[in-house]
Length: 354
Ligand SMILES: [Mn+2]
Image (tube, rainbow, N blue to C red):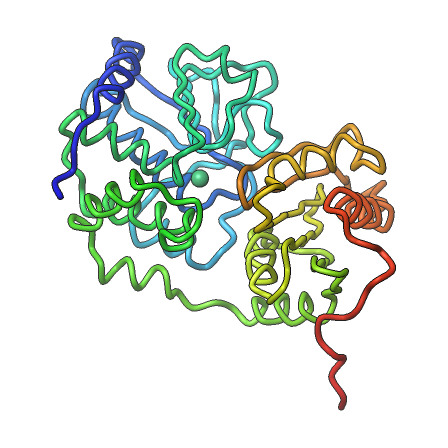
């Protein structure tokens, strides 16, 4: 079926492009430790602004490009991502934000700054409404799908690299169009896949991983504990924060489980990922309850998510870090909110014998 334009998209792109009129440089914020959907969506917004308004964009982020696949994406598709520490925010006359929103705690937008443009597929936040332009639709599986609609609406030709990025972005956020996917994601995927370099996409998705990857994985499985029908593991200190989400996904595949939690410590924070297949208990609500309800993660924690997946971060500077205390708070509050007994515990795998 041919890809179709939507009336609602036309209204959105018109408003967005009106805002960009006469502007010169756009700074696009994405989430910390960005994933393929964030990178692809930012590339697409940059392309739209360049093609229709001759606005040049810089994509900025904080944290690291952790997963080998994501590093391969950036390398093969020649994406330039500039760390926030190397950016002078005052050099820009337009501020964009994609795949995240102000005040979520997982991006480096300076405190108090209101972006001009916000496009995201997580639940709408109150702070976002201050933006002159926002398009936030939680029924989309990927922000890349929303930006694909914009580009199609505005007849912007996709480069091979951009089409490949968008295809990867949509696949990555929807577990290959299987999780939280709408027909909109599938239609957009077909559109970009037809124009992408599928051989290169395959190469990116199957990028080699370092030995450390298997060390983290082994450690995670050895430390995993089952409490009734939920499973929890901690990774200790990590250099790649993306492992937390990847391992939570993996643990949820364990039969009879309705929830999984994985957490780890980066240099200045504890981060956690929650996954659930419980229709009643939305992962986003679960994480919000973990932050708000006693025994809570504390006032400094922030987080969010939706449907089956959510995450949070708790500041934990290396100097006064009380990792054990935070670890206990994470585990206790998760078990409390999801309703699983602390006492009924067993190890996921038996300790190996020499
Ligand atoms: Mn996304």
